[in-house]
Every structure is written in structure tokens, then in C-alpha cells.
Length: 145
Image 1 (cartoon, helix red, strand yellow):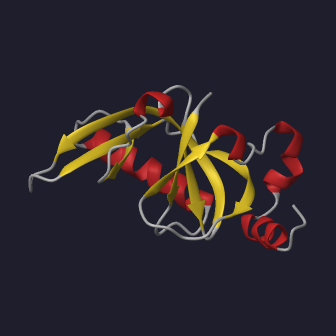
Image 2: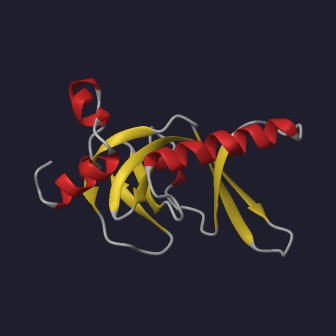
């Protein structure tokens, strides 16, 4: 059973913001001749790497809701130029929309068990996926989703 990570998507106002940032970052990497892979840098290395890499995803909290996820491809520890240990979460660039669920802010990242993770929006929720994200967020806050 997969284990996931949960993280705040700081600075993003919407899922589309996240997608645009990923597209821009991949373009910039290609332009300077670096491998075009999407990654997120963090300070702490998960202790349960094998479980996370066994089908896990990084779940993003956007504006107080768990709203999207990206499949985790690799976790690469490294030491930065200041001698500080960090790691890259290497992610599939495809962003998967989720059935929104409220989440309070926190620092860093948290483990998220598969059974506790919000479900993907999926094909059966196409009308919901087409709804403006702000409206989905309001309906979820009201307990109507």
C-alpha cells in the first residue's frame, strides 16, 4: 500500500497556477540545456522513502484544501552550496485534480496514508472538474461536495 506526502503549495492560488509554474520551470530547464524533470526541493528527507516510492504521490494543499497530486518518481538527497542537507522530490509533471478536502496549514510536509487520501476527480466527475475551482472550493467548504 502506497504512502503519500502532503505539502502546502505556497504561492499558488489555484491548480492552474501550479500547472503553469510546472510548464514554465520545464521550459526554463530545457532552454539552459538541463534535463526537463519536475522536482520540488525540501529540507527534510523522509524516513519512509521506500513506502513513498511504492506508488506514492505528493498531495498539494492549495488555499486551504487538498486539491491536487503528482506521482512521486524519485527522492534524491543532496547537500546544497551552503552545506545544508536537502532533497528533491522528483515528480511526474502531470497534475491530477482531486475531490477537494479542507486542510489546515502546517510547516514542512506530512505523511498521508492511502486510505486517508482524497480521491481523484476521475472521469465520473467531469462536470465537477469543469466547474471553476473557486466554486468547487466554496461548495466543499459548505460541505456540499
